[in-house]
Image (cartoon, rainbow over all chains, first blue to last red; front, side, top):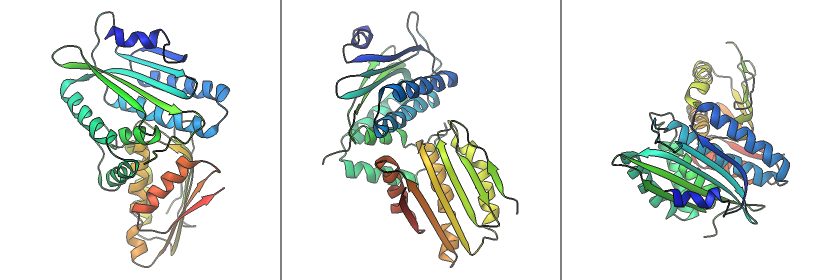
Length: 185
Length: 124
């Protein structure tokens, strides 16, 4: 797992704008939102790009908060977050523990949703918006689709086995700077 | 019936629900962690309003951005107006978005595509 985190620690994917390691508490995610917004206000002139980053960020952080696991390992943090800026992209990286059964469901959803074209993904979103119900955690089941839609499908994910019951879920989402990031199917 | 006014915060929208005018307005940001809880008083107000609605109801949306759970709550609220529209009352949603704000335009189009009430997208 550490080797996969080193590229972030060493800023190999862009200039690091923000880094956080700790627990995904409500105050933490609120603070990250404020800090990212403040940094974008200073560094990103395009309001469309700013808004798109914020929309994706909110869904990532609130998903992690709603599905947070009370699980930590010695010498490791239960939640990591980075924001990078490369030449063409803003890159949001998050990492959190997830139980095996939830991880299997998430893997399946990610596989299914990322395989869809832009139009099919929109249909899936509308179907869930119109017919879906709130999850027991209070989510709408739309966050993951929204992240994929708004990033134009530009994301990578890794499920790193930690023990028999847990994975560490790493998500890297790229938002194209000064572009609408739409699918081009 | 009483009007309902909810002040906006950094994470929740300003909401003005005027029964006497048949006008509902939502503006600002809507990104609460628990949108069911936040929108509960709004849903209750709408349920009471729909018992004796005005002949014309206008719903004004001037949101900067919102999270997906708010989107689900807003959908549930809009959906409640379909029945009175079917029964002959006038219902209109005016969805405002700013120049080049494709995300808010796209969200408005999403709602318009699945709701059975008149829905206007207005570029400001």
